Image (cartoon, rainbow, N blue to C red):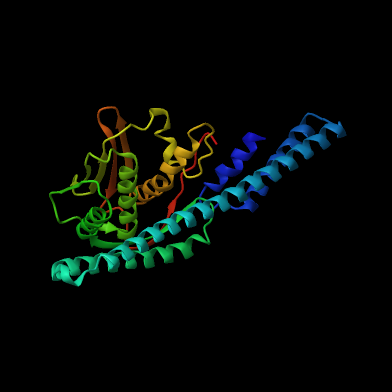
Length: 311
């Protein structure tokens, strides 16, 4: 039955799959088995009835697992979006609270821009929240691609993090022309999640670095590094799984890492890229995200989901 439940979850990760198709698969399987029975002249009605009961039960279990997985997708996508919307609105509120007219026009303008930026980002994510309510099998967030220069968005993420966190954050970006076709809101959320994790799990007395490199004419790399205890080697793949059902004492820790990292992986792959993780003693942890500048066309498209293969 565990294998059957896995089949339902696996189908939920298959793009455009439906409950009707699961039932159709089992009908085909049932017909093939009956055909084999007929070819071998099996007439034992008890065996045939038992087979039918097993197939019916398997079909019900598979449909149940499929439906449950779709619901989990919706809950997690909506929960992640709601979490990031709250963070954006909190940053906007912080900017308003720090708005001191006596601090001088430059400081006031910086806080105003930070607040407006955070509110605008929250509004974009609310649109994504509405899209997530109608998610289907294999589908993730709806992204909206446009031709832009990412530099100002990344620079704003760095400046906002400097205001919010007490940790020293180092920003490195030699090229200010980071042009390409991106979803800027998704990239900002990606970096915010990586920086938040770096602050949460890093050593507070040591700096966090955000490094952006134009790798070639096609790709950018965005790397966030922190010092501190490494992520265990055996857990480094699991933290990216969208619906992680890992058993064990570290489940809570994995889930706390995975809330943002599933989003990071989805966004990277939607941009034709990938995520690389290095985490070891005497080095700390670095997440490096590669994104293509040219693979997408302007417009909307949904990301695909990644499931644990051993669920």
